[in-house]
Length: 110
Image 1: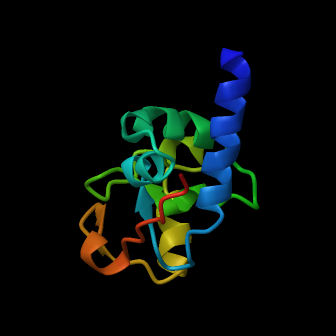
Image 2: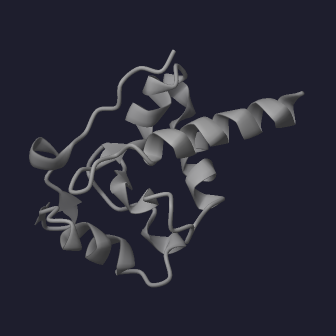
Image 3: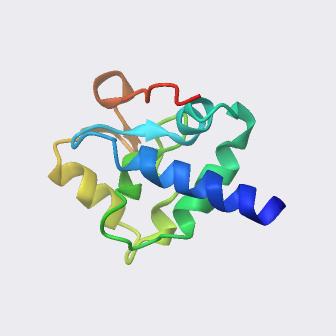
């Protein structure tokens, strides 16, 4: 039963990540909150790690609460996540996405 719930949650994460507009980012915590389990930010990360490299899920658009690219190690190269974001027009202040400009807050799904 727990495994089925985990799979359902992962599917919900992936569906929500597919909605992030080009040129925008959201956080692990915002996704977890939109799915009704604010404390599940780490599990959101696990869901995205499970589909690393999957072209229909724009995991590069998910950053930590400070705008840092903590998921970058799951991409083909350590710089690919940033390169993908910059190609979409996302700007940075040092190593952090400028959240004041690019943050997308997903709608509540529950």
